[in-house]
Length: 160
Image (tube, rainbow, N blue to C red; front, top):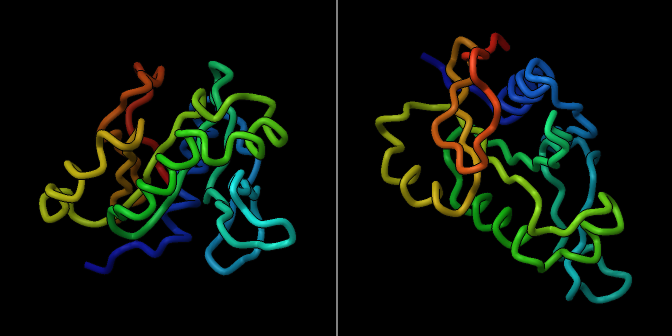
């Protein structure tokens, strides 16, 4: 069974977020050069280094902003990147772009692949990121963990 590519995971989760009432503001497809850019407060002027472009930026129904990083498999580097954004390293940029403190952001990882074969990596990242979305090869989204307490009662998994 062939796994999902990053762009497929991103698109399925973006559709899922829309189905639960979120407003998707931007999607950054791999290699597409699009999306919302957050720059580190420590970034040297005139440089593009140390910036983060989340794969999905959306406004949840409760008003919170969610930043999603997608990969074919769980990616610890993406979890660490999201943790840096929320920890304040990108505070000025987040306030300028979204009008909120970076500590109020909801962070999420979206990934495909087998849950069993990724159990250790999932355990490594679940405390770093608020929400974990698993996308099955059939295009179904399943909530693996949720520290934000998303209001998904009655929603279930969504078709991609």
